Amino acid sequence: MAIIAARSTLAARRPSRQRLSLVASLGLLALVLSAGQPAKADCVGYSKQRAQKDAEALKATPPSLASLGLPDIKGLSIIADKSASDPKCDPHEKRTVFWYKTQLSLQDFYAGVFPYIAPKNNWTSPALSHDFYLSSGTRIILYCNGGCDRKPVDQPGVIEEINVRRLPADKAKPLTDAGPGWNWTALDLAQGRGIPAAGKASAYK
Image (tube, rainbow, N blue to C red; front, side, top):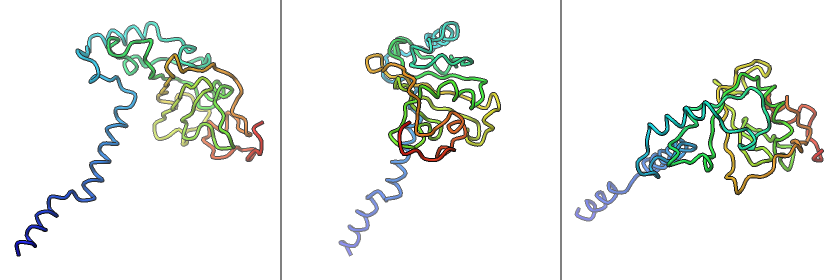
């Protein structure tokens, strides 16, 4: 009986698979939620007041698109409050994550960035789920209420937010206009197509 009781106690102390899975899931969720946010915990004396002043400064004088590895896209406005941080913790010259908004339609936005999108090495969409890289190494993620794939591509204002993640200055690459190739068009990417309308290409161009 003592042996049985000991085994029961040991089993009770062991975390169940379900519990371990829940802990792992919560940990992953925390990482996702923290991605792209100012690292307040890494800065002693983080100041909300300095962050608010930073937001005001960003609104008055946003960073140039070229400094973010972006082409000259008309109609982008910085979301200052979301892009701001305490400069003491996150200096402007080292900051990599910025948020923008636009009234451009999906079709017009993709027309502006299409020549500069980094191509994939086969016919796979270079902008799958509206998450893609430019030749400069800058990453762009589009967010639409209800999903961008469900929106009319020619309707202005469907893009809610644009997440821009530039590379650190020492890792940034030149912005070139080679284009994605493989039969892709700007309209294909705006529509979120899985394959080009013209069909799969057997060569890059």
